[in-house]
Each structure stands twice: as C-alpha cells, then as structure tokens.
Image (cartoon, rainbow, N blue to C red; front, side):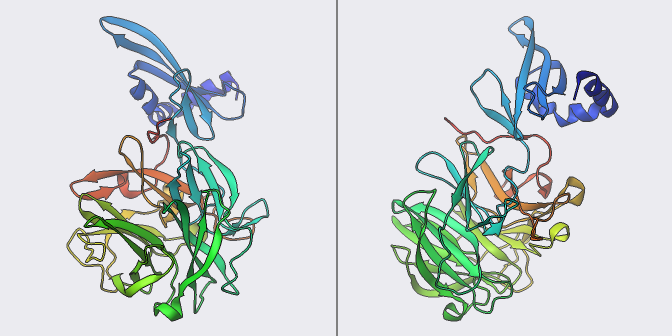
Amino acid sequence: MNRSILSLFCLIIGTGLMAQYHHFDAALGLQHADVTTADIDNDGDLDIIASGVTKEGTEIVAKSFVYKNNNGAYELQGTGKGATYYQNPIFEPDLADPTVIRAADGWFYAYGTQNTWPDGVNHLVPIVKSKNLIQWQFVGNAFTSRPSWKSAGGIWAPDVTYTLGKYYMFYSVSTWGDANPGIGLAIADSPAGPFVDHGKLFDSQSIGVSNSIDPFLFQTTVADTLQNYLYWGSFFGIYGIQLSSDLKSTVGTKFKIAGNAFEAPYIFEKDGRFYFFGSLGTCCEGANSKYHVNIAVGTSPKGPFRDKAGNSIMADGQVGSQFLIGNKNLGWVGPGHNSKIVTDDAGNHYFIYHAISVDKPNLPNGATRRPILMDKINWVSVWPYIISNVPGKGLLKAPVINP
C-alpha cells in the first residue's frame, strides 16, 4: 500500500485506526501521538509507526517508535524486548483441542488433535513450538505411526505433562459416535517426540463411562505427597480416577465431578481452590458452532464444584458459570477445549484454546478448521474472567517471557 493510499485510508477510518492501535502510544507514554501504519520492511503486512512527545524531567522530547509486524506479533524495534503485542489467532491453520507446556529446553510446545491440514498431510498429533507464545513454528508429529491397540479412530485431545523426567501424553482414540472409545498413554524423552505408545489405559467398556475421551492429567501435592489424577469425559458425565506413581495404571475406583453438560475437563489450582473449566455445546459445526467454556470452583480436586450462584455442577443439566463464548460479529465462534493455563514470567495467567473463524470455518477436506487463540485471564475476588467473555480482538498485550 503506498503512502498516498494509506493516508486516504487513515482519513476515511479516522478515529477507528487510533482506537485500534491506541495501545502503542499508551505503552510508550507518548503524548499527542500520531499512530499510523506502513509496510516498512516490504514484506506485505502493515507495520506501526508511533510518533509524539514524552516528558523527560522538565523537558518535552520528540519520540518516534517503530513496531514491525511479524505474523501478527508486533516487535518494538531497537529495544531487544521482542514482541510486545499480538493478535489472535496465535497459530493456524489448525491445532484443535490444544495442550501447551513449557518444556525443559525453555520452549513452549503445543500439541493438537490429529487432522489433515491444507498441506494434504494427515498429521498424527501435530506439534508446534514458540519462545514467546506468539510466534510458532511447526516441529513435526508426535507419532510416527498410529497406536495399534484400537483398530479404528483418530487420535484426539492429547494432554502432555512433563513429569518424572519425561513427557507423558494421555490421548483419546475415537470415531464419531464411537460405542467404545478409549484413552491411551505415550511417553517421550523430548517434547518434540517421537512419543512411544504404551497402549490403552482404559476404554468405555472397561471403565464404565460412555464416551471416554478428552483426558487431562492433574497433579497436586497432599501432605508432601504428589497425587496424580486423570480426569476425562464427554457429555456423559465428567469423571476422575487416581493414577499410580508411574502414571501407567489406575488406582482405586473412579469418582464423578460433573454432570452431562460438559466435555474436555480441566482443573486449575490457585490459592487453595480448584477451578473446573468445561466445554459445552457443539465443537465441530463450522461457523454454526455453539462451543463455549463455563467454570465452577471447589475446595477439593474431587469436588463438589459450584457455580457463582452456589449450584453444584454434579447434577445433569447444571452448566456452571459463563467464562468464554463466541461472537460472530467479532469473527470467532466455538471457543473451547482449552489447554493448561500458562503462567508467564510476570505471574499473569493466559488461556489458550481453539476457536473457529467465521470467515474461514473449514479445512479443505470439509472438517472444521480450529486455529488456536490466547487471552489473558483476569481475576476479581476468587473468580477468573476474560474481558467481555469473548475472544480477544485487535492488539493484545503479549505475555512476559524472559529470555
């Protein structure tokens, strides 16, 4: 875009441009700022120029700053601070049902449900990595071959945890409407894999829970002893069970923590409370998806978990309290199946999840296209929230990640 066209563009949208990019002048302390856009580095995207004045002591000093656009992550030039802002989505085309960890090598790794991308490759649990949670690069696939303990079904909803010096992945194998889906375990020495399959942990028939998918490993310390719980379930109740110290087998009997409204359970421990996040609605109907996330809180990892009105989510039909919903006007629907909450180096919490672009809802093979998004979690009293309960739009402040 040449400067004359850009000037006309800026004139037409007027204060809309300033509203969209107001973070830049505010972050830098600029007064009377002029914020404009231009493709400074000729790479086809618009970079940001913020010009104005700052007060240094008693002096008014003219200042100009440049942010280069690196795939939606805006990097303040000449400071060494790296990306300070980003825009959703943080990775596309697809990384459904994501799980994100910070590995021992300092990189963040994200893993997603098996799917065929626009490259035509059927990715057996794709892996991507990032230094800052914003700019991601494809690593490879977690599996070199499909686990053989179940004859049919895709590898869905991987959950990866670094523990016992290795990377443990619990995963689902299921077809749509599967009468007997199951959950398996694979282990790797490296976050980039390959993951070696250790076979089936249980299936619906053996554990007695219909639609046994969407596993999540939760670890907590009780009386100086690490306790391992696996949670799972999809619209036939959410259940948990204790695991052995090597995580390769179940211990005791299962327990129920939520009714039939939810799938993709996740538990987050903070200040002596246990926060339940569950996804509801239809995950995979393209732009018509009604997927969303609700929450409840308890004082034990076994519940009871209650919504903001004090209602237990154990009963069928109880849906918890609203946390994150889609909004077609903002361009995103179907937000849900979140990862583990990530804490940045300043102690901020970030919520990473998949959602569906209204403009690009499907992959070439017709499957629902689910890139990943990220939003900061805020807290009021004991309750977490995302601003306006919808996916973040426009420029968002990046997580603080130390070099």
